[in-house]
Image 1 (tube, one colour):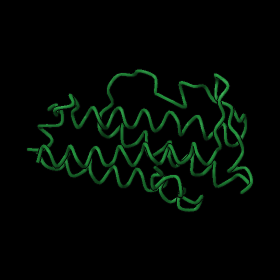
Image 2: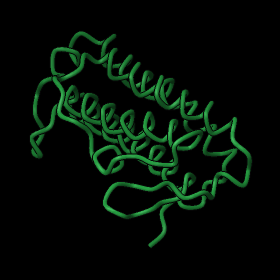
Image 3: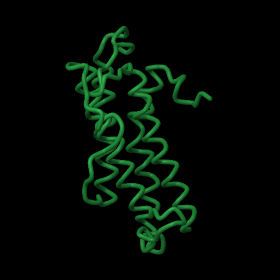
Image 4: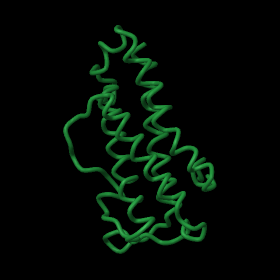
Length: 161
């Protein structure tokens, strides 16, 4: 079954990427500005995730792929499987750092994609292990990860409200 991201045109994809920091920042800002909600950012849900965990993991996953694709789309046409599939383990990020990290990476990717020729959106990017994916499909995955992070943060905020 196709999802909403599979049909995103390049122009819409750039708009989505450039809006991620603002949209994620809106949710994080609501939590940070409410002392009662902010006190609960480390409270775990039934899946064992807190608001802070979701922000940190989502930003690392999204920004790792975005950073790798920004280079692959404009230069190397290669990336590691780790960059494409998952993110390296890091210490948990503060909420502001999570927002900033995903926002900067998404904006950098949008700028990189904006600079390539239209035909290059369909160019293959070689991923370690022998698989390939197109620039646009990988960019759609960045948007998917960012929007899923946003939705998960909104959901968790509503749970702790």
